Each structure stands twice: as C-alpha cells, then as structure tokens.
Length: 298
Image (tube, rainbow, N blue to C red; front, side, top):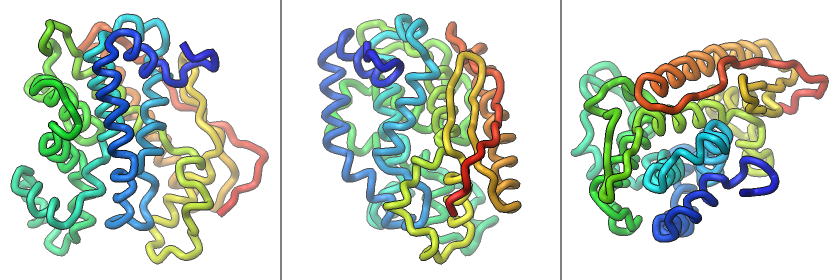
C-alpha cells in the first residue's frame, strides 16, 4: 500500500493480484495520455478532460472504495474500473472522421429535432459517454483488452459515468462474470465512476497556467472555470464530501449552490444503486460546504 494513504491503492492492488492485467492497464495509460488531450480540438475552452482528469477520477475512486472494501474487489473488477476511469472521456477527443463513423453506432433519438442547429461539439459533448463506448470497442485490440466480456464491462462503466440508468439490469446486470469466473458488480463500478467524475470540481482541475479565462470567447465556459477556481479543495471523509469554497461574485455563488445540489443528488443515486446492485457500499452521505478566508482568483 502507498504509505501516503489512498493514492494508487487500486493500481497497487491490481499489480499484486494480476500482473498481466496490471501491465495491460499501464500500457493503456502510456499509449493514451497524449490522445486524451485531443479534447481541446473541439473544446478549447472546456474544463479539463485530459489524462489529468482521468487520473483524478481514479484517485477519487481510490478514496470512495477505501482499503477495507478494496480487499473484496477481484482483479477483473479493478482492471475494468481503472480502464473505464482512464477512458471514460475518450469520446471527447475524436476526429471529424471518427465522429462521422462512430455516429453510425449511436442512437441519438430525437436529439436533432430538439436541437436542429446543434454543432458537432454540442453533439459530442451531449453524447460523449456513447462516443467513448464506441472508441473502446473500435480500439479493443490496440488497448489490449483481454476478452469481449472485459470489453463489455469497461464500456458499460464508461457509459455509466453520466446519463445512463444505473438501475437498468439489462445495462448493468447485478451478476456479471468474465472468463475465469470472477464476478463484476457493474452497478457498483458505474456508481463509483459517476460519483468520482461529479466531485472533480476543485481549482486544480483547470490550472491557471493552462487556461487564460480573460481570453475566453464563451462566457458560459468562463463562468464554469471561475466556479472551479472558487472551490479550493474537496476532502473525502468517512461520511461526507467537504468542499472549501472562497467567496465569489453572486453569479458564481449561484453556480456553486446548483453544483452542490446536483452533487448531493448524484451521491444519493449512487448510494442507492450500489446498495441495490452489489454487496458494497458508498459510505459518504452528505455534501458539506465550508467558506474559506482566502480570496477568489477570477
């Protein structure tokens, strides 16, 4: 175990349980780290969705699981979760050719009836969990995914990070097995990634050195960056998520209030999905906001 606490406990545990699956995951990290930065082609002013965000999501999963529950997770579950965490936003960085190709496999329903003027960027943003799923499917061999069963698990957990119905047994079966007999609790893994993605809201997600808000042309995206910068830290305790927030202008304060409400709703949903679909538990119950004395940096 990492002597510093929760950092890398999933990775270390996977290495101890199955060196082959651990190698496959680390190869993916090496191969994909630059590719994930391609999200900026379509979203130059969007909050960070690169490998840095992927690693933050993994770290939050480490904290949500904790050492005791980690001991009950088998290697296939850990591998599927790590791969999904790292690849869950891969659909954000697809090329135009990939957009046209991948779209053939995605059911977008009446989306274009409701959004007749939607740009490619808007479509990708609204369906990026589905584009990520197609990305994993298309590049399964390159990613060295060992079986179709592992591919399905990774794809479903990727998709589970937003919008999908975590209570749908046809999408997230309670009992799902991979070659070798290990059981993967997909509702639990999908709940972990959804919650971890939801709470990655701190200022460090969008470093000042990488984003010049004053040069932004999209006021909506600029406001989101300001919201992130107002959230100085997020601590995961046994029972709560504690956000330290700097005083900010009224518009940003309102955005933070809405964010906290959504975070609590996501926490409640993921707790319920985990309890109904697995023998695991999400221990945290509340989202708590604490005002700091520090000044807000716009």
